[in-house]
Length: 212
Image (cartoon, rainbow, N blue to C red; front, top):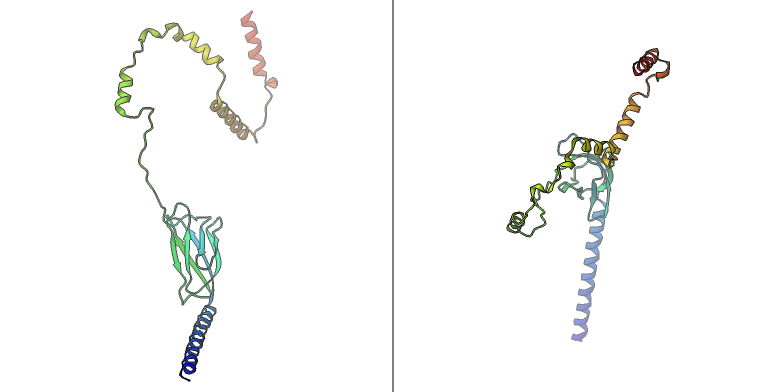
């Protein structure tokens, strides 16, 4: 008889514990459901408070939802009261914002990001393992000063080389940019024909007479 009573008491205890857990979980679920939904909007600005930061991640880690700012730093998303929001972007320190219980149905905030500047030490790259080895290599050089032929430094030869050497990549790019700029400047200007200019013909005939 005592064994049956103890078994009944143990069974009742287990049932009461399960019922308590279910009640607590249901209360917690109801509390979560009772949280107000807030439409949170805002603008993310730079450290100078004069520029907008696009592409900033604004998300709630626990809920797994979020959004990003557009090209003018604006965002808008639904949140719950008490949500902890993380604002992060590459090159800036991470910001945090907690939705207050007294927030309005449409809440607007302004977030100012602080730049995360990292200074790296200067690195000098040399083809020698140590400075002493570099000094020894320089001192070991024995280049005769008379090895340069003075004929190669002739002014006429240098001028001919400068005239006949084809332009490289940067020179070609510079020439193309100059031509484009000249075309844009003269785009709305009248185009003149030099053959219709009488002064050009006079210069031409004078040059012919001088050559004769």
